[in-house]
Length: 400
Picture 1 (cartoon, helix red, strand yellow):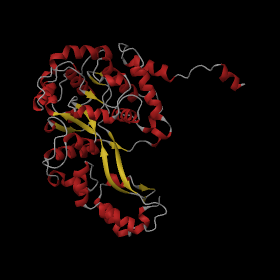
Picture 2: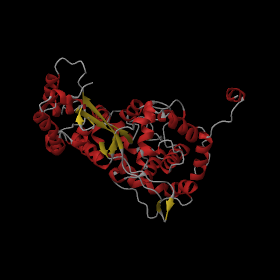
Picture 3: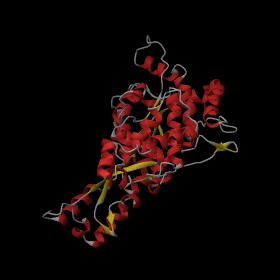
Picture 4: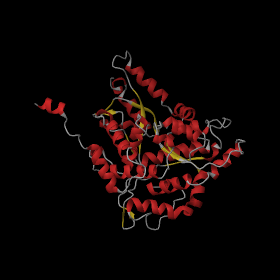
């Protein structure tokens, strides 16, 4: 590639960059020079069904004793002091998600039955099943979701490879808790699930909460035209929020001992100029033309992509006519403010993605389902999984 700045008049480039979201333009700069121009973005947010959230809010205390006992077995204390499930997922942390997931997994889905009546399938019996999902197994999607979870619990790029880091132990403890109490789909016990499979379950209204980006959210809903066919039964029940704040299961003085933040890695698509481009000036003009407000507005509505223009971020409540799309963009832009970044270069470059997925598989799914999930037990399991095996005869021969 060659810098896009090479084909741009400095004044035109400054004007173009001023129209775009600063965080996006910064991702296209290398050593102070603009190599790429941002085109559009994607970021995962929490997607949920409003009737399911209302159902959990009204009925979770029916299971409070059982939830408290399950957590007490893990952290020695149970729920945080004075815990109440927040009514809006925008205020959720790890405890809220666990409590809601428990409630949904232990009771018939009243909200799902309503959708079945909508779709003329009222003869189906009520179903009790897990209603929260994320990519699991050893796929690339599962690795990326694990990294998102680590950073929500406070992980930093400098902590990659530190297998005693608190964010790693906290993340694995929560995932072991979800697995132990049957709060995730059965596919996680088998071959795992990719993001498209999670989306598919939501599309069938078999989930109440999942982490999904804007393009897949548009597919779930059914399209940005007012006359578009619904993408799923009861698509009008869809809503969006920022992802839950990471919190340790371990308590201190009645509250989470460690708190992370709401976080999601952002995917930014960039315009790039090939090094052999015969006309870099024309390339810049094309990129600038296609990033104008009207075209980017229509592209966002057609494809569900997150706009990278500053004026669209400012004006989305009036620029986008459909109320559901306004809510989706509102959650997305708030997610950018609450926490987002690029994937660390070392995550794939140094094979940490494979190493962490194998570690998670060993600690969360490789132990018996009834194994202890205390922090001490998780730490010991991590140590066993990361301990180098003793050298065998071949290694001794090589050493000689």
